[in-house]
Length: 180
Image (cartoon, rainbow, N blue to C red):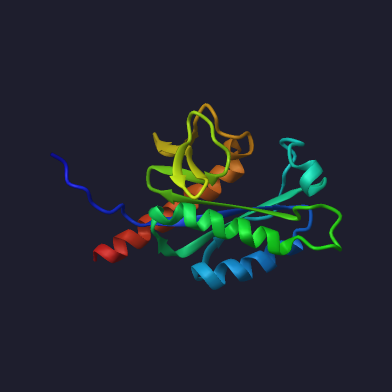
């Protein structure tokens, strides 16, 4: 019989989406207050893969990612998503012409996968609790992150995958230092 054991630490990643990239720094400040320092920041990229968010968030969306330096317990993913959803509501303000000026999508990266948290249920997602589901969005195989059949178009791009490869390299280096 197998014995339960805790999952090895992972890296918390947060995708930020907004038509107002200046909100990324405000979000980063709040996120670092809760999750510690940021180890890696992506560049700001155009998000023109879908118009799904236009009514709620506006046009001309930009995307950026943060990866945090502190080890992340994957068992806290649902709690983290609930917290980032509350933070999104704090950013909604009367001076913004849309109800959701920023979208914060937490997930975790470990050496084998990128897992994202969501409130949307689909057959390939696993319920975590608190109204939150988890989805393996990318798997690491054959030396690279590979998309799953359901992976969103933006997460298939070379720019996103390069960022996640660098976060994975940071995570593996941190683990090697801990083992020394």
